[in-house]
Length: 222
Length: 234
Image 1 (cartoon, rainbow over the protein chains, first blue to last red):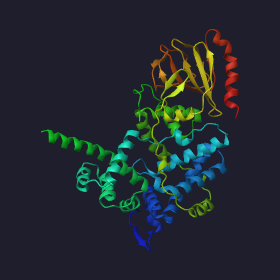
Image 2: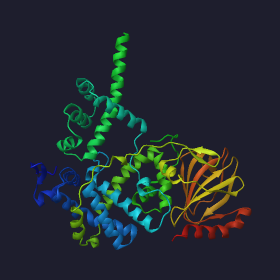
Image 3: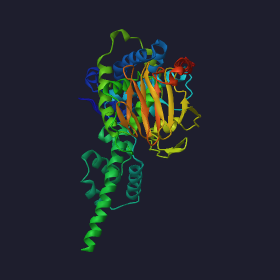
Image 4: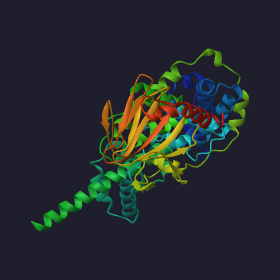
């Protein structure tokens, strides 16, 4: 969260108590998390102040048209407001996330104006890292094993070998039984980042589970 | 992510930069993207360069772009939040695609582009071409060459990007295999030959100028076809 800010929960709704000065000191990432997790309007206004003119400038550079550039500001900032949870801070900075989004949306607007007949969108061209299907499968099977009530002590023991952020994500969900939303709020990270850490943790846990089984079987043979 | 052997020829830093900045035509961007999707070296370079590109964008804001966006701000904050869309996670589809008589595993962006059937036609002895209308500025073509087929010596009035998708192809400056990305411009004169046959993607922003044999005769037609073909939606 923003430096020097406090989060209060009142009647089920979270809000952030900050002054404009404190907000102006906050990093883009801190502001995005406040928008993602608390729907913090003041934090969004600060992001808007920083990014709207930059998105407009990018629109002018790529489309050379004021109206398209204004539409771009509307589309990009709406996505920031509505989908801030999709920002994954483990993959890059907030400015990189917003820049990529603005470039892709602008290119898609221009594609439509040019009546491009191809099915490929800007997101297909400027792709994020695409996870390996084998890893996804491993994550899903680990997830099922854990959800079906695997030994909590064993999960905790195996989790100790994971990087701290991934271990924490697994503990919150599978040991403390929190929802993804609750866990991301507790960790003060966007939901998208939380889900990504959990998935990576599960993939590694699955590998450790396999090693662990191997060790047990190896011991039995001795 | 990658599934082929490591590529030996890659887009240079300047081209990567223009790709990330979004200033290349769509056809050229797709060629770069297709290489990056199957090249771990470039995927890593792109991740680093992305941060640099966005920093430059953020740091070099021109003050003249100050406008009143308060109406946009007001309309945006009235909108509800959306649930996290997890369908955005894509899994590599490595199903081979039929290109002429070959089965080729394509980078996802090209697999999507070729999901509707390509129309192949013979353009020279042992060479077939499938054009895809991608954008008004570039000519975007898949080329399938039979073993021992050759492209006559030529120069370029603009640039030529070549991405090898399968097989081998050689020119005066190197020998290329699957996923090699080669950029040539006005300074380069070359002819190409394949030993075992190949499928390549070519993206050009201006016609070739043939330097030898009967191919020289088609230079004026090529020029007309290129400008008509790439400019027809402009």
